[in-house]
Image 1 (spheres, rainbow, N blue to C red):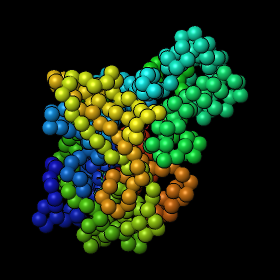
Image 2 (image 1 turned 30 degrees about the vertical axis):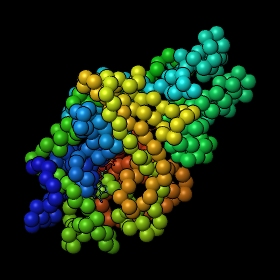
Image 3 (image 1 turned 45 degrees about the vertical axis):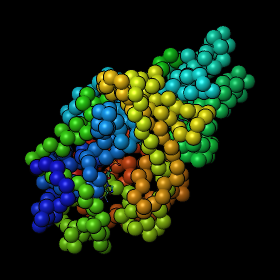
Image 4 (image 1 turned 180 degrees about the vertical axis):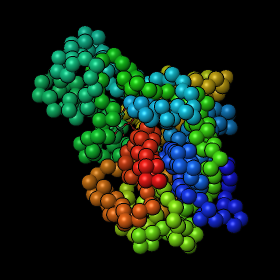
Length: 399
Ligand code: FAD
Ligand code: UDP
């Protein structure tokens, strides 16, 4: 039914079976599945002026395809997620590679066999590598916090080097905390890799970029006769939660509501704001073909930004004489002033606060929360898609 800006004159929510808040992966996957499997008429309410949520990409003034909300690389181990998303796009065979700039030397991250040799020299690096193989086996992902627990002095030397030069300063910049002050699952995302694979997602069976763009993927997913998308509309102006029910435009709503925004915001932060990190995204277009050798260089010991991404290196786009790079500056998110809450802070007191908000919607049987914001989880795109597939499975089977 199309994508329009604003709500049409006389918009009647009751004429829709489902109202989805947010046109990112969580909302778009649910909308498509319910339209297709149940014949539901779906209205998607999105307050930004575009679809695709944080995965949105577009051409900048120089004609370079950029990711407005930071570099997005598709990777998944889930056959189901891959099969589902592949209905709406083809993929390039891009394998994301990241180098850490360590005192001017560029070393692969995850820290691997080659990084060891660059850091310690060929001979000692090889010796240390063999020790790692003996301790963990070959082609293994080892979280840095696990490596640090080994008592062997040579393994401790490796662990200290990697901790100090790869994780400590980057993590301080990204989270304002040291690696041992944050949840181990966050560090576990980027292990030490005992092997030669120098891809950022070693061994992920599916990885790449959408052949055209993420926005194109979403255009296909949302292109369905029963789906209408309304941009530039804030759902908080339409939705209110009553005792056990949802009101839309002041009337009790009998259809399903799928909410993919932040729950604390929906309640006006009345129990306190859920903490997030936001990122200042600073784009720069340079008059050159290529700025750096790989998609992303992490500045793990220097600078006050975390990383530089060069989009052409990821998308494979050819734009002679121009390239656009992005520097990311992470900082505390300020609630309620229109900033983007990029990263959930996975700490017990925050999860507790989230659960208190969540408890308020649990008895509203037609109100469902899904996605990185609404579930307050550090999800990648595939995790959000998997969660949306599960929620829509439930809704389809109860239809
Ligand atoms: P979102 O994409 O945030 O969509 C939610 C939508 O809801 C938004 O468009 C928002 O405007 C809308 N909304 C919220 N409240 C309201 C309201 N009141 N009214 C109307 N609309 C509302 N994942 C990967 O797999 N690979 C990567 O390389 C990767 N890189 C990332 C880099 C960065 C810097 C960040 C922050 C994330 C990255 N991710 C990556 C994660 C990925 O962005 C998310 O997993 C995914 O986009 C989340 O989808 P979502 O639908 O849950 O949320
Ligand atoms: N990390 C690090 N150094 C690196 C890469 C990652 O310290 O070179 C840590 C850092 O704390 C980061 C976390 O590992 O926040 C997860 O990294 P990832 O690249 O997965 O983060 P994202 O892409 O989600 O920003």
